Length: 104
Image (cartoon, rainbow, N blue to C red; front, side, top):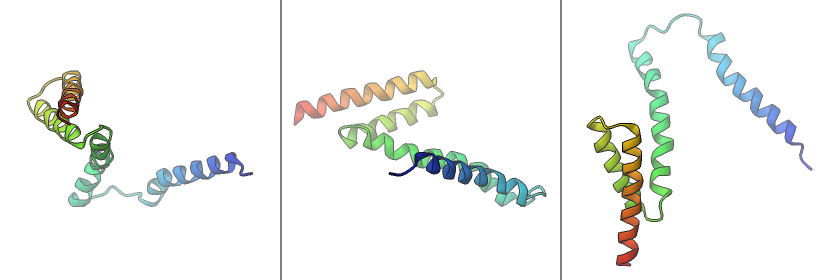
């Protein structure tokens, strides 16, 4: 039988090294505007890459996820609150799936 504590220890070591190595290896401030710009947007891109497939695949019909995403993007663009955007996206999924099930 495998010891789960060994797995946890290995994951903790890898996570720690990933966070500590850049601090120890890069001592000078990064002066390249391109590299700083790239590193600034990495968290946002990573979040988007992880979130977008979940939006599409979490619904019964992919069309409902796509429509909810479109509604959320439009409402967010016009500065609506996060709660309003989230509720609108949920209602869009609910109504779209009801319509699709009624048609099928």
